[in-house]
Image 1 (cartoon, helix red, strand yellow):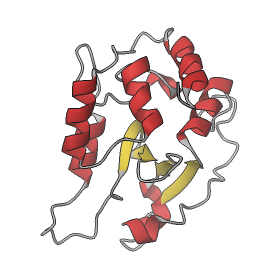
Image 2 (image 1 turned 60 degrees about the vertical axis):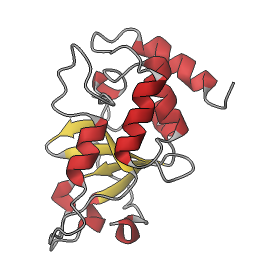
Image 3 (image 1 turned 135 degrees about the vertical axis):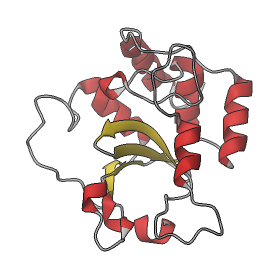
Length: 183
Protein backbone atom coordinates (compact mmCIF):
# COMPACT_ATOMS: atom_id res chain seq x y z
CA UNK A 1 0.00 0.00 0.00
CA UNK A 2 1.20 3.53 -0.74
CA UNK A 3 0.41 6.96 0.62
CA UNK A 4 -2.28 7.43 -2.02
CA UNK A 5 -4.62 4.55 -1.17
CA UNK A 6 -7.16 6.67 0.74
CA UNK A 7 -7.45 9.37 -1.90
CA UNK A 8 -7.57 6.77 -4.69
CA UNK A 9 -10.44 4.95 -2.98
CA UNK A 10 -12.41 8.18 -2.55
CA UNK A 11 -11.70 9.29 -6.13
CA UNK A 12 -12.78 5.87 -7.42
CA UNK A 13 -16.02 6.05 -5.41
CA UNK A 14 -16.88 9.50 -6.76
CA UNK A 15 -15.72 8.64 -10.29
CA UNK A 16 -17.99 5.59 -10.36
CA UNK A 17 -20.89 8.01 -10.90
CA UNK A 18 -19.39 9.42 -14.10
CA UNK A 19 -20.92 8.33 -17.39
CA UNK A 20 -17.66 9.23 -19.15
CA UNK A 21 -15.23 7.12 -17.11
CA UNK A 22 -13.06 4.74 -19.11
CA UNK A 23 -11.67 1.39 -17.96
CA UNK A 24 -8.27 1.62 -16.22
CA UNK A 25 -5.11 1.11 -18.27
CA UNK A 26 -2.87 -1.91 -17.98
CA UNK A 27 0.74 -1.79 -16.79
CA UNK A 28 1.85 -2.30 -20.40
CA UNK A 29 -0.17 0.70 -21.60
CA UNK A 30 1.31 2.84 -18.81
CA UNK A 31 4.87 1.73 -19.65
CA UNK A 32 4.31 2.49 -23.34
CA UNK A 33 2.90 5.94 -22.51
CA UNK A 34 5.87 6.77 -20.27
CA UNK A 35 8.31 5.61 -22.95
CA UNK A 36 6.62 7.88 -25.49
CA UNK A 37 6.69 10.79 -23.06
CA UNK A 38 10.34 10.21 -22.14
CA UNK A 39 9.73 10.32 -18.38
CA UNK A 40 7.62 8.64 -15.73
CA UNK A 41 4.25 10.01 -14.70
CA UNK A 42 3.89 11.25 -11.15
CA UNK A 43 3.09 8.12 -9.06
CA UNK A 44 -0.39 9.35 -8.06
CA UNK A 45 -1.27 10.22 -11.66
CA UNK A 46 -0.08 6.79 -12.81
CA UNK A 47 -2.16 5.16 -10.06
CA UNK A 48 -5.25 7.12 -11.13
CA UNK A 49 -4.96 5.77 -14.66
CA UNK A 50 -4.27 2.21 -13.50
CA UNK A 51 -6.69 1.97 -10.59
CA UNK A 52 -9.53 4.43 -11.30
CA UNK A 53 -9.84 4.85 -15.05
CA UNK A 54 -8.37 6.06 -18.31
CA UNK A 55 -9.97 9.49 -18.01
CA UNK A 56 -13.56 10.67 -17.95
CA UNK A 57 -13.68 11.54 -14.24
CA UNK A 58 -12.47 14.36 -12.01
CA UNK A 59 -13.49 18.00 -12.36
CA UNK A 60 -16.35 18.25 -14.87
CA UNK A 61 -15.80 14.50 -15.54
CA UNK A 62 -13.08 15.56 -17.93
CA UNK A 63 -9.72 14.10 -16.91
CA UNK A 64 -8.07 13.36 -20.24
CA UNK A 65 -7.40 9.81 -21.31
CA UNK A 66 -3.77 8.78 -21.02
CA UNK A 67 -3.95 7.10 -24.41
CA UNK A 68 -6.82 6.66 -26.85
CA UNK A 69 -9.65 4.74 -25.24
CA UNK A 70 -12.74 3.11 -26.73
CA UNK A 71 -15.85 5.25 -26.32
CA UNK A 72 -13.68 8.29 -25.60
CA UNK A 73 -14.77 11.57 -27.13
CA UNK A 74 -11.58 13.35 -26.09
CA UNK A 75 -10.11 15.37 -28.90
CA UNK A 76 -6.65 14.56 -27.59
CA UNK A 77 -4.97 12.50 -24.90
CA UNK A 78 -2.32 13.17 -22.26
CA UNK A 79 0.46 11.64 -24.36
CA UNK A 80 -0.52 13.23 -27.67
CA UNK A 81 -1.32 16.52 -25.95
CA UNK A 82 2.13 16.65 -24.39
CA UNK A 83 4.02 15.58 -27.50
CA UNK A 84 2.12 18.11 -29.64
CA UNK A 85 3.14 20.91 -27.25
CA UNK A 86 6.88 20.18 -27.24
CA UNK A 87 8.56 21.82 -30.23
CA UNK A 88 11.23 19.83 -32.09
CA UNK A 89 14.79 20.54 -30.93
CA UNK A 90 15.61 22.46 -34.11
CA UNK A 91 12.40 24.51 -34.16
CA UNK A 92 12.73 28.28 -34.30
CA UNK A 93 9.84 29.22 -32.06
CA UNK A 94 9.17 31.19 -28.89
CA UNK A 95 6.42 28.74 -28.04
CA UNK A 96 7.30 25.92 -25.68
CA UNK A 97 5.69 23.74 -23.03
CA UNK A 98 7.54 22.92 -19.81
CA UNK A 99 9.28 19.56 -20.01
CA UNK A 100 7.64 17.05 -17.69
CA UNK A 101 4.30 18.89 -17.41
CA UNK A 102 1.57 16.72 -18.89
CA UNK A 103 -1.85 18.11 -19.77
CA UNK A 104 -4.60 16.38 -17.80
CA UNK A 105 -7.70 18.48 -18.38
CA UNK A 106 -8.86 20.85 -21.11
CA UNK A 107 -10.86 23.61 -19.42
CA UNK A 108 -11.83 25.14 -22.75
CA UNK A 109 -10.84 28.51 -24.24
CA UNK A 110 -7.29 27.08 -24.56
CA UNK A 111 -6.91 26.81 -20.75
CA UNK A 112 -5.30 23.53 -19.72
CA UNK A 113 -4.57 21.90 -16.36
CA UNK A 114 -1.29 20.03 -16.19
CA UNK A 115 0.67 17.94 -13.70
CA UNK A 116 4.37 18.59 -13.20
CA UNK A 117 5.65 15.03 -13.22
CA UNK A 118 9.15 16.24 -12.38
CA UNK A 119 8.05 17.71 -9.05
CA UNK A 120 7.93 15.51 -5.97
CA UNK A 121 4.31 16.34 -5.17
CA UNK A 122 2.97 16.49 -8.72
CA UNK A 123 2.20 20.22 -8.71
CA UNK A 124 -0.98 20.98 -10.65
CA UNK A 125 -0.67 23.97 -12.95
CA UNK A 126 -3.08 26.01 -15.00
CA UNK A 127 -1.98 27.26 -18.39
CA UNK A 128 -3.99 30.41 -19.18
CA UNK A 129 -2.92 31.76 -22.58
CA UNK A 130 -4.73 35.07 -22.11
CA UNK A 131 -1.93 35.98 -19.68
CA UNK A 132 0.79 35.72 -22.37
CA UNK A 133 2.54 39.05 -22.84
CA UNK A 134 5.09 39.85 -25.54
CA UNK A 135 5.72 36.18 -26.36
CA UNK A 136 6.60 35.48 -22.70
CA UNK A 137 4.85 32.30 -21.63
CA UNK A 138 6.09 32.38 -18.04
CA UNK A 139 3.24 34.64 -16.92
CA UNK A 140 0.65 32.23 -18.33
CA UNK A 141 1.44 29.40 -15.88
CA UNK A 142 -0.37 29.45 -12.56
CA UNK A 143 -0.26 27.21 -9.48
CA UNK A 144 -3.64 25.52 -9.19
CA UNK A 145 -2.53 23.23 -6.35
CA UNK A 146 0.77 22.41 -4.67
CA UNK A 147 0.15 18.72 -5.27
CA UNK A 148 -2.05 16.40 -7.30
CA UNK A 149 -3.37 14.96 -4.03
CA UNK A 150 -4.43 18.45 -2.90
CA UNK A 151 -6.06 19.14 -6.29
CA UNK A 152 -8.04 15.90 -6.01
CA UNK A 153 -9.09 16.75 -2.43
CA UNK A 154 -10.47 20.09 -3.65
CA UNK A 155 -12.45 18.28 -6.35
CA UNK A 156 -13.71 15.69 -3.85
CA UNK A 157 -14.88 18.45 -1.51
CA UNK A 158 -16.60 20.40 -4.30
CA UNK A 159 -14.71 23.61 -3.53
CA UNK A 160 -12.68 24.14 -6.72
CA UNK A 161 -12.50 27.50 -8.49
CA UNK A 162 -14.38 25.88 -11.39
CA UNK A 163 -17.42 24.95 -9.27
CA UNK A 164 -20.60 26.82 -10.11
CA UNK A 165 -20.70 28.49 -6.70
CA UNK A 166 -17.12 29.75 -7.08
CA UNK A 167 -17.36 31.11 -10.63
CA UNK A 168 -16.95 34.87 -10.67
CA UNK A 169 -15.18 35.06 -7.31
CA UNK A 170 -11.97 36.21 -8.96
CA UNK A 171 -8.82 34.61 -10.22
CA UNK A 172 -6.30 34.60 -7.41
CA UNK A 173 -3.84 31.89 -8.42
CA UNK A 174 -0.18 32.76 -8.16
CA UNK A 175 2.12 32.60 -11.15
CA UNK A 176 4.22 29.41 -11.14
CA UNK A 177 7.64 30.52 -9.92
CA UNK A 178 9.49 27.82 -11.90
CA UNK A 179 7.88 28.72 -15.23
CA UNK A 180 10.68 30.91 -16.56
CA UNK A 181 13.38 28.34 -15.80
CA UNK A 182 11.37 25.42 -17.22
CA UNK A 183 10.28 26.95 -20.52
